[in-house]
Length: 133
Image (cartoon, rainbow, N blue to C red; front, top):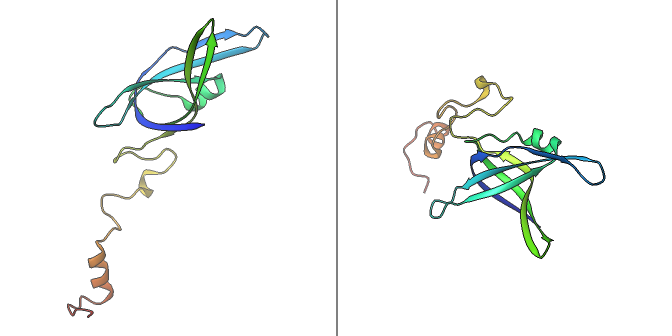
């Protein structure tokens, strides 16, 4: 089962690395996301597993993100532990922010190219004030 939540990164924790019993290297990084819920915002700790995913996600404090994750629980010596494992992150653009890789000149400026529907109809009809009915 997969879930998604949006919020702002409050803190990025230190990357942890090690070697598994089978001799494979592993890395994990956790970060704290504060949800955008205006009534009851909360802090949630997410985990990114694997050097490739950590590099791909490149989470930074202060970013607005939509995080897609799976929930996994496991038993260890009679105690249960639950992880929120990230599998995808989308960056949320702020109103005045430019999308990465898109030249600033191609971004719309203010209301450029936008007209209210009534204005557009009047221009098409030659500013005729007659009612259509």
